[in-house]
Amino acid sequence: MDFAFSRRGLMQGAAAVGGALAAGAANAGPIAHVREARHPGWVFGRMTGAEALCAALLAENVGCVYGIPGAQENELWDTFKEKGIPYLLVTHEFSAACMADGYARSTGKPGVLCVVPGPGVTNSLTGLGEALLDSSPLVAIVGDVANGEKAKPFQVHALNQVDLLKPVCKCVYQVQTVAQIAAAVRQAFITATQGEPGPVAVVVPYNLFIEAHDFRTPPPAIPAPPFDDTAFERALPFLADKKHRVGIYAGAGCMEYGAELTAVAELLQAPVATSVSGRGVISDSHPLAVGWGFGPHASAVAETVFAGEKKHPLKSGVDTLLAIGVKFSEVSTGYYGNPQPKHVIHVDANPCNLGRILKTDVCVHADAGTFLGRLLACGDTLRRAEDKWLVNHIRTLKADAAKELCNIPQPKCGVDPLATVAALRKVLPADAMLFTDVSVTEHLAAEHFRVCQPRTYFNPVDNQAMGWSVPAALGAQRVHHGKTVATLTGDGCLLMSAMEITTAAREHLPVKFVILDDQAYHYMQMLQKPAYLRTTATILTRLDYKALAQAFGVAFVEVTSHADLEPKLRGAVCHDGPVLVRVLTDYSTRKVRWVDAVRARYTKELTAAQKARFLARIGSRAIQLEKKND
Image (tube, rainbow, N blue to C red; front, side, top):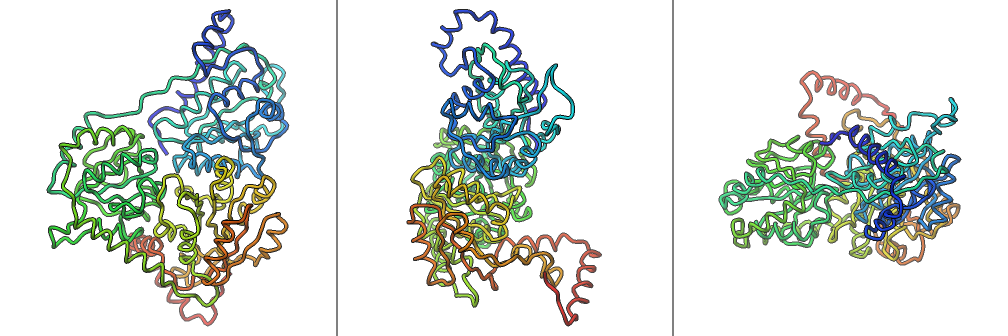
């Protein structure tokens, strides 16, 4: 991911801020006490590096720090306890990053993890990469080997922490002196949220945690959100032209502005589709909401509404697309399968995202909230009459889609995954949080699981980090007391992070872990079988889930038929504690729009020679008497 600002510049800027504060500390004198009284939020007074770091976290109202203490950070973790900063011990640093991510997505505030150098850093990289590609704000407090005159070579964990972190972080601040710690941490929270959100790391040599310094660190300045007035004025005529139907494609950048987005949709009488990460920015119950995406890979309702009926003027499709806070990433577009409208206006807080996929008429570098507010201020120019045909058309399509969920046939050997999605929607409260994972069912859930509130549906979209859902759900449950939190996790994904369920038991975090068990990487099987007429490395071991739940110390529920689904899931939701729910799953011939669309698009892009090689291989294997799968 590219960002408009320089990572190196931000790192140097933090160091300069820290250096300036250190230089001024000696001259602060009594007047500093007056500053503290007049400017709350300062990190002020003589304290150790660990204490200053904690003071910075307290100033940011951090709800929890996720991680594992180590030799280089025991001073810091002891200070967490002394200063009353909430923390959660995890079983693996991958989980620490995912928990911080779950915190961030569910609260809208930066999630915080704390890891030791070396293996602590390398273990966390996958989770940080997910946060980077999914635009989720994190602050990683990373210990480093000792620096200074007394530092020796060949220290334990002496990897280059900064260079390891750079590829998966929006920015890395490398602290060199104790005086820089508070300023670097405070700046990290600003950087993590400004523009397009993302993870930021603060790397601190462990010897600095015990050094003392007189801190006089004010809160950092918060930059104004971006807004390109010239581009905005160029976009208005496209939206004001009543001869064209406007459709809105909204991403996670709109998550804090659901009311404004809904008002703009009503103003323009525009159907609204979302990216996967944008689910919940508008309620699926709204008359203009059409679901996920607008191509053949995603919601059938959205595809039909956006395409329209070209031969009928009243039933025309969308020809002017207003895309706000969205990147058109590969997964959300089904391998870049969204159709190209006649006109496209693309709005995003990160200029590097603009106009990268679809041909765009106007690129507006702007914060989504500011842009939507400005559109509403132009209501007299943009307002359209109520489109009763459009509203009725969407209502009919949604009703037809809902009927599909009421008549799902019972497979021979278990539960249809779509039936699980439908049952979860029935038994979970409207404000419950559902964390999906990297299974083929993530695409069924994206299309069919109704989302009516923001920050209640979550998916590892762009890095596709298997096992993300279990720790991410725990990270959210840790700070959302009283809310129902559940996962929709494949059995392959569970193998990546299953041990984190012990954290749920230890801390009594009542997450409902719904596991789709078919003893296979079914996602890969759906991709492999048509292309190779066999599967390779997709068969998983058969686990005793009841024994596993007992070993973990959590309750257990097993679902083997459609008749069991709703009552047993409802019982799990009502249980006061964590529950492992094994759903015996049979994908059978279940069609998945995303998979079919991606396969068709990929095949279409193959050269003639590549297609010939595939066909020749398939032809030779079709006549084999034995097809070996493993």
